[in-house]
Image (cartoon, rainbow, N blue to C red):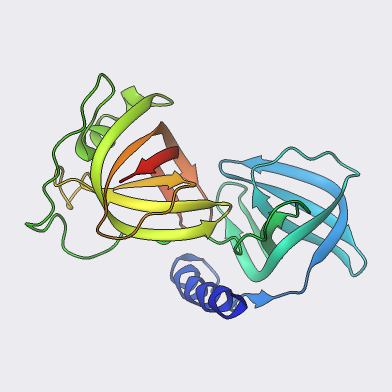
Length: 234
């Protein structure tokens, strides 16, 4: 598991280097991070924490959480990244630790990192032609992407095929799906879905979730539209 986590982190570092203003060094695994919360900053999808640790102050980023100043927290499965730029906060961190606040009753989660972008392969090959979902909130991928303004914070249903899967990032699985609608030229053929469900590339799935707009994870990972906290079932 540690080997897989390290490989995933190194792969991510390459992606970050392509987007960040100052190319960061590869993330380094750490053994654990415990500290007192001195400051918190909430953005879409996760929370920044300034921590006082035995080795001095440091910043950490965890999935969105409610934590008070003065609280003692432990970051599980931490991974350090240098020169990380957050466009949302308009700040570059010399060093920041990604992970999750440890729950002693839960299994360890994979290291937090940014999800990969949509696959660059040719859009909507002949094999991708999925029938539209049924129901009052049923949409195609193209209808969600092009009509995102009117769908903000609304539930949608979608019938589509998985074209990319990234698991265990910021406490979620990140899934790109397509149904044959839309165009690669304007990006209306692909949409990102966050979920706790596990699926595989090639699976045809039913997606039910909430449309969110303008999610910015920093370092160039910005999503004009995605479906959040979805149920994704075959």
